[in-house]
Image (cartoon, rainbow, N blue to C red; front, top):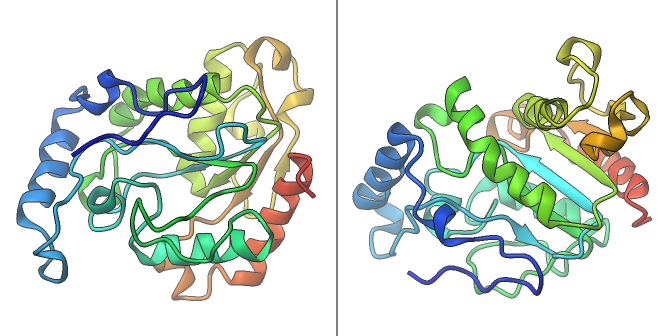
Length: 242
């Protein structure tokens, strides 16, 4: 399976990411899911590899998710594509003018994002959708790859606590003077990390929190379209896309 084409000046899928096996448990699980498959997709070839980021390489808004879904991104090879989480996310982006269409079913479905790049705290699907702290720390290298490669980012939207924590830890490792306790995750919260000591050295940007767009949250009403639109709109404004 061929990796996606690299935008000019930034390679979202370098060879060492495409073949990454730094987390043996995740590498084995992603490949097992791709072998066994879900009955509904039995005739499809699964991606079964680390999933690259996706979107506009000139993005000013960076969205940080959790990890690929077993039969969504791990199947299609594109972030939030082919499952219910993506259905919710891209519909919201389309409503706010950040995507050219509200659906995402495959890598060649014509979806384009406007000013947005989507990445994840872990690039391989984890068992039970729960990467370990060590796996997240190991995969932070690839999160940093996107942070460094996207030169125009002005704001970050974290989907869920893991996306939030991964972003704060990345900045902290690069010189931001902050603790997780000082910037707790809360849906709709806006954290002005860019105003904290060490922000310039770390490259910290304003961080907006939103509950993850998982089926568990959207099906139970914990996260409604209106709630998510409000958080996404705040991130869009901070990114200069309003």
